[in-house]
Length: 240
Image (tube, rainbow, N blue to C red):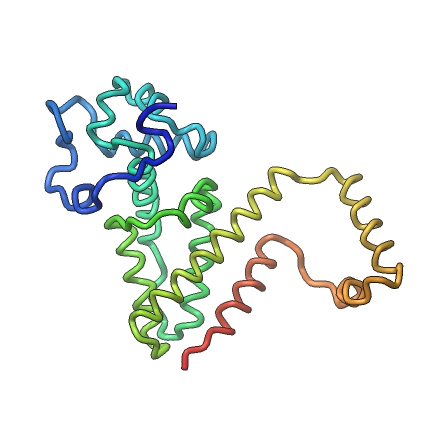
């Protein structure tokens, strides 16, 4: 594990990271033949293809044809690289639908947009909750979400909290979806699980579970399940 990827790496000052007039000028030394954008794109491609653990300074350097040490001029550690990656892909959120003025409907649309986005980049669902630095593309989407919540009557601080709650919900749900897909049960194993729960529900010791399993069936596709959970979250928000 390198210095830049070891425990305790905390990234750079966000003002230096996002407000530097010339981000392609290295923090030290002469300007190399590649850009911060190229480094970020290479890291995102690795994460999309192989997962976030595949993103190391050595792998990214190899992808852009640079020496490992030269990358430290742009991203001194993996934390900073993750900030760059997240903000880069968040540029895809700029195509959000125009707001309707119905804040609950708009918030649900934002939730669906976030889920689609995180499913395109599965590493995002675990990377986003731990990030605190908001880059310019992320801030643009945050501005959109806060504007969507304005008709709710909530003050600015509460609107920030609602958006954070929504994002945490979507990230957690997508992380679960991704894990379930990776550990998909075989048809035989899935059938065995159903028979097991049926037997447990019939043993007389789990009346609540028995009632739940006997209730009317609901669509269990990933899209339907997410929509149902999202509706419960947003419809239950108190805008008073």
